[in-house]
Amino acid sequence: MEPVQVPDADAFRAFQAQCEAERGWQGRYSREGVGVWVQPPPPAGPAVHTVKCCIDIQDVPAETVYDVLHDIEYRRKWDMNVIDTHDIARLATNADVGYYSWKCPKPLKNRDVVTLRSWQVVDKSYMIINFSVKHPQYPPRKDLVRAVSILAGYLVQSTGPNSCTLTYLAQVDPKGKLPKWVVNKASQYLAPRMLKKMHKACLKYPSWKQQHNVSVKPWLYPEQNELPTMMLSDLALQHAASLENIDESSLSEVKDERGDHSGSEN
Image: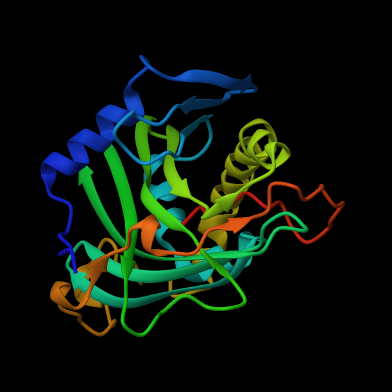
Protein backbone atom coordinates (compact mmCIF):
# COMPACT_ATOMS: atom_id res chain seq x y z
CA MET A 1 0.00 0.00 0.00
CA GLU A 2 1.26 3.44 -0.92
CA PRO A 3 1.32 5.65 2.20
CA VAL A 4 -0.91 8.72 2.52
CA GLN A 5 0.25 12.13 3.68
CA VAL A 6 -1.70 15.24 4.65
CA PRO A 7 -0.83 18.02 2.17
CA ASP A 8 1.81 20.42 3.48
CA ALA A 9 2.32 24.14 2.81
CA ASP A 10 4.18 23.38 -0.44
CA ALA A 11 1.23 21.34 -1.72
CA PHE A 12 -1.15 24.22 -1.07
CA ARG A 13 1.19 26.70 -2.75
CA ALA A 14 1.40 24.43 -5.79
CA PHE A 15 -2.39 24.11 -5.90
CA GLN A 16 -2.85 27.88 -5.72
CA ALA A 17 -0.28 28.39 -8.47
CA GLN A 18 -2.16 25.92 -10.68
CA CYS A 19 -5.44 27.75 -10.05
CA GLU A 20 -3.88 31.11 -10.92
CA ALA A 21 -1.87 29.96 -13.95
CA GLU A 22 -2.95 30.98 -17.46
CA ARG A 23 -0.37 29.20 -19.60
CA GLY A 24 -1.29 25.75 -20.86
CA TRP A 25 -5.06 26.15 -20.39
CA GLN A 26 -7.61 26.07 -23.20
CA GLY A 27 -10.68 28.28 -22.78
CA ARG A 28 -14.02 26.49 -23.15
CA TYR A 29 -16.56 28.93 -21.69
CA SER A 30 -16.64 32.63 -20.77
CA ARG A 31 -19.88 34.37 -19.94
CA GLU A 32 -21.42 36.45 -17.14
CA GLY A 33 -18.36 36.36 -14.89
CA VAL A 34 -17.86 32.60 -15.25
CA GLY A 35 -14.92 30.99 -17.04
CA VAL A 36 -14.06 27.35 -17.77
CA TRP A 37 -10.67 26.08 -18.98
CA VAL A 38 -9.33 22.63 -19.79
CA GLN A 39 -5.75 21.39 -19.57
CA PRO A 40 -4.74 18.27 -21.52
CA PRO A 41 -3.10 15.51 -19.49
CA PRO A 42 0.72 15.55 -19.23
CA PRO A 43 2.57 12.96 -21.35
CA ALA A 44 3.84 11.02 -18.33
CA GLY A 45 0.83 11.45 -16.05
CA PRO A 46 -2.71 10.08 -15.84
CA ALA A 47 -4.63 10.33 -19.13
CA VAL A 48 -7.25 12.60 -17.60
CA HIS A 49 -7.92 16.24 -18.44
CA THR A 50 -7.89 18.86 -15.70
CA VAL A 51 -10.82 21.27 -15.60
CA LYS A 52 -10.68 24.71 -14.02
CA CYS A 53 -13.76 26.86 -13.38
CA CYS A 54 -13.81 30.38 -11.96
CA ILE A 55 -16.59 32.74 -10.97
CA ASP A 56 -16.47 36.36 -9.83
CA ILE A 57 -18.80 36.84 -6.86
CA GLN A 58 -19.70 40.47 -6.17
CA ASP A 59 -22.10 40.05 -3.25
CA VAL A 60 -20.68 37.39 -0.91
CA PRO A 61 -17.52 37.62 1.22
CA ALA A 62 -14.82 34.96 0.88
CA GLU A 63 -15.41 33.78 4.44
CA THR A 64 -19.02 32.84 3.66
CA VAL A 65 -18.10 30.95 0.49
CA TYR A 66 -15.47 29.03 2.47
CA ASP A 67 -18.08 28.12 5.10
CA VAL A 68 -20.50 26.88 2.43
CA LEU A 69 -17.84 24.68 0.87
CA HIS A 70 -17.20 23.08 4.26
CA ASP A 71 -20.71 22.80 5.67
CA ILE A 72 -21.79 19.26 4.84
CA GLU A 73 -25.23 19.66 6.42
CA TYR A 74 -25.96 22.65 4.20
CA ARG A 75 -24.63 20.83 1.13
CA ARG A 76 -27.33 18.20 1.54
CA LYS A 77 -29.84 21.02 1.20
CA TRP A 78 -28.57 22.82 -1.91
CA ASP A 79 -26.68 20.13 -3.86
CA MET A 80 -29.38 18.33 -5.84
CA ASN A 81 -26.85 15.89 -7.29
CA VAL A 82 -25.79 14.40 -3.98
CA ILE A 83 -26.84 10.85 -3.18
CA ASP A 84 -24.91 10.60 0.08
CA THR A 85 -22.18 12.67 1.66
CA HIS A 86 -20.66 12.38 5.11
CA ASP A 87 -17.40 12.82 6.97
CA ILE A 88 -15.86 9.56 8.15
CA ALA A 89 -12.95 10.42 10.43
CA ARG A 90 -10.55 13.15 11.47
CA LEU A 91 -6.91 12.83 10.42
CA ALA A 92 -5.50 16.14 11.67
CA THR A 93 -6.71 19.55 12.78
CA ASN A 94 -6.99 20.51 9.11
CA ALA A 95 -7.76 17.18 7.44
CA ASP A 96 -10.41 14.48 7.35
CA VAL A 97 -11.55 11.57 5.22
CA GLY A 98 -15.03 11.54 3.74
CA TYR A 99 -17.47 9.87 1.36
CA TYR A 100 -19.44 11.47 -1.49
CA SER A 101 -21.72 9.88 -4.09
CA TRP A 102 -23.52 11.75 -6.84
CA LYS A 103 -25.98 11.41 -9.69
CA CYS A 104 -24.67 11.31 -13.25
CA PRO A 105 -26.63 12.20 -16.38
CA LYS A 106 -28.84 9.33 -17.51
CA PRO A 107 -28.13 6.68 -18.68
CA LEU A 108 -24.67 6.75 -17.07
CA LYS A 109 -24.09 4.95 -13.80
CA ASN A 110 -23.83 7.10 -10.70
CA ARG A 111 -20.38 7.62 -9.14
CA ASP A 112 -18.81 7.82 -5.70
CA VAL A 113 -15.46 8.73 -4.17
CA VAL A 114 -13.64 8.36 -0.85
CA THR A 115 -11.26 11.27 -0.36
CA LEU A 116 -8.78 12.79 2.01
CA ARG A 117 -9.67 16.45 2.31
CA SER A 118 -7.42 19.14 3.73
CA TRP A 119 -7.78 22.90 4.11
CA GLN A 120 -5.67 25.97 4.77
CA VAL A 121 -6.17 29.72 4.99
CA VAL A 122 -3.25 31.97 4.01
CA ASP A 123 -3.81 35.71 4.15
CA LYS A 124 -7.01 36.19 2.13
CA SER A 125 -6.76 32.91 0.24
CA TYR A 126 -8.95 30.03 1.43
CA MET A 127 -8.09 26.59 0.05
CA ILE A 128 -9.61 23.10 0.22
CA ILE A 129 -7.98 20.22 -1.66
CA ASN A 130 -8.76 16.52 -1.86
CA PHE A 131 -7.55 13.28 -3.42
CA SER A 132 -8.82 9.71 -3.43
CA VAL A 133 -7.83 7.18 -0.78
CA LYS A 134 -8.71 3.60 0.08
CA HIS A 135 -10.61 3.16 3.34
CA PRO A 136 -10.93 -0.38 4.74
CA GLN A 137 -14.61 0.09 5.55
CA TYR A 138 -15.56 1.76 2.24
CA PRO A 139 -14.77 -0.66 -0.61
CA PRO A 140 -16.24 -0.02 -4.09
CA ARG A 141 -19.97 -0.71 -4.32
CA LYS A 142 -21.67 -2.77 -7.02
CA ASP A 143 -24.39 -0.17 -7.60
CA LEU A 144 -21.94 2.72 -8.13
CA VAL A 145 -18.78 3.33 -10.13
CA ARG A 146 -15.85 4.31 -7.87
CA ALA A 147 -14.29 7.40 -9.43
CA VAL A 148 -10.82 8.65 -8.56
CA SER A 149 -9.97 12.21 -7.56
CA ILE A 150 -6.34 12.63 -8.61
CA LEU A 151 -6.50 16.19 -7.32
CA ALA A 152 -9.48 18.47 -6.84
CA GLY A 153 -10.19 21.52 -4.77
CA TYR A 154 -11.31 25.09 -4.30
CA LEU A 155 -9.51 28.39 -4.03
CA VAL A 156 -11.48 31.33 -2.64
CA GLN A 157 -9.76 34.71 -2.82
CA SER A 158 -11.12 37.85 -1.23
CA THR A 159 -11.45 40.86 -3.54
CA GLY A 160 -13.22 43.15 -1.08
CA PRO A 161 -15.26 43.16 2.14
CA ASN A 162 -18.23 41.59 0.34
CA SER A 163 -16.74 40.08 -2.82
CA CYS A 164 -14.42 37.27 -3.91
CA THR A 165 -13.42 34.90 -6.69
CA LEU A 166 -14.07 31.16 -6.47
CA THR A 167 -11.94 28.74 -8.48
CA TYR A 168 -12.71 25.03 -8.72
CA LEU A 169 -9.96 22.84 -10.13
CA ALA A 170 -10.38 19.11 -10.70
CA GLN A 171 -8.52 16.22 -12.26
CA VAL A 172 -10.98 13.39 -11.71
CA ASP A 173 -10.95 10.01 -13.42
CA PRO A 174 -14.60 8.90 -13.83
CA LYS A 175 -13.37 5.33 -14.40
CA GLY A 176 -14.89 4.70 -17.76
CA LYS A 177 -15.04 5.66 -21.38
CA LEU A 178 -17.56 8.49 -21.46
CA PRO A 179 -19.53 9.68 -24.49
CA LYS A 180 -18.25 12.90 -26.04
CA TRP A 181 -21.56 14.59 -25.22
CA VAL A 182 -20.85 14.08 -21.53
CA VAL A 183 -17.37 15.60 -21.76
CA ASN A 184 -18.65 18.57 -23.74
CA LYS A 185 -21.65 19.08 -21.50
CA ALA A 186 -19.49 19.00 -18.39
CA SER A 187 -17.31 21.90 -19.51
CA GLN A 188 -19.83 23.93 -21.50
CA TYR A 189 -22.90 23.60 -19.30
CA LEU A 190 -22.59 21.65 -16.08
CA ALA A 191 -19.54 23.34 -14.59
CA PRO A 192 -20.84 26.91 -15.09
CA ARG A 193 -24.24 25.87 -13.79
CA MET A 194 -22.67 24.29 -10.72
CA LEU A 195 -20.78 27.50 -9.87
CA LYS A 196 -23.90 29.63 -10.33
CA LYS A 197 -25.89 27.26 -8.13
CA MET A 198 -23.19 27.43 -5.48
CA HIS A 199 -23.29 31.23 -5.66
CA LYS A 200 -27.03 31.19 -4.94
CA ALA A 201 -26.44 28.81 -2.03
CA CYS A 202 -23.86 31.22 -0.61
CA LEU A 203 -26.37 34.06 -0.67
CA LYS A 204 -28.83 32.03 1.40
CA TYR A 205 -26.30 30.54 3.80
CA PRO A 206 -26.15 33.26 6.53
CA SER A 207 -29.90 33.11 7.20
CA TRP A 208 -29.89 29.29 7.05
CA LYS A 209 -26.94 29.06 9.43
CA GLN A 210 -28.70 31.29 11.95
CA GLN A 211 -31.23 28.47 12.38
CA HIS A 212 -28.74 25.57 12.30
CA ASN A 213 -26.03 25.51 14.98
CA VAL A 214 -24.91 29.03 14.21
CA SER A 215 -21.70 28.83 16.28
CA VAL A 216 -20.60 25.37 15.12
CA LYS A 217 -17.88 25.56 12.46
CA PRO A 218 -15.32 22.83 13.14
CA TRP A 219 -13.35 23.80 10.03
CA LEU A 220 -12.57 27.07 11.82
CA TYR A 221 -12.61 25.75 15.40
CA PRO A 222 -10.97 22.28 15.52
CA GLU A 223 -12.01 21.82 19.15
CA GLN A 224 -15.62 21.49 17.89
CA ASN A 225 -14.75 18.49 15.71
CA GLU A 226 -16.51 15.41 17.09
CA LEU A 227 -15.43 12.96 14.39
CA PRO A 228 -13.55 9.85 15.50
CA THR A 229 -9.82 10.04 14.87
CA MET A 230 -8.09 7.76 12.38
CA MET A 231 -4.46 6.94 11.71
CA LEU A 232 -3.07 7.91 8.30
CA SER A 233 -1.44 4.50 8.17
CA ASP A 234 -4.93 2.93 7.93
CA LEU A 235 -5.43 4.63 4.56
CA ALA A 236 -3.73 4.10 1.21
CA LEU A 237 -3.69 6.11 -2.01
CA GLN A 238 -6.39 5.06 -4.45
CA HIS A 239 -4.99 4.64 -7.94
CA ALA A 240 -7.28 4.52 -10.95
CA ALA A 241 -5.49 1.50 -12.41
CA SER A 242 -6.71 -0.75 -9.59
CA LEU A 243 -10.39 -0.04 -10.29
CA GLU A 244 -12.67 -1.41 -12.99
CA ASN A 245 -13.27 0.67 -16.12
CA ILE A 246 -16.85 1.01 -17.37
CA ASP A 247 -17.40 1.55 -21.10
CA GLU A 248 -20.30 3.97 -21.49
CA SER A 249 -19.03 5.64 -24.66
CA SER A 250 -21.94 4.46 -26.83
CA LEU A 251 -24.71 5.69 -24.54
CA SER A 252 -26.98 8.45 -25.80
CA GLU A 253 -28.20 11.36 -23.71
CA VAL A 254 -31.54 10.97 -21.98
CA LYS A 255 -33.69 13.92 -20.91
CA ASP A 256 -33.77 13.84 -17.15
CA GLU A 257 -35.14 15.92 -14.30
CA ARG A 258 -33.08 14.34 -11.51
CA GLY A 259 -30.77 17.29 -10.96
CA ASP A 260 -28.04 19.39 -12.51
CA HIS A 261 -25.52 16.56 -12.80
CA SER A 262 -22.53 18.75 -12.16
CA GLY A 263 -20.28 15.88 -11.28
CA SER A 264 -17.87 15.51 -8.42
CA GLU A 265 -17.89 18.72 -6.41
CA ASN A 266 -16.84 17.60 -2.94
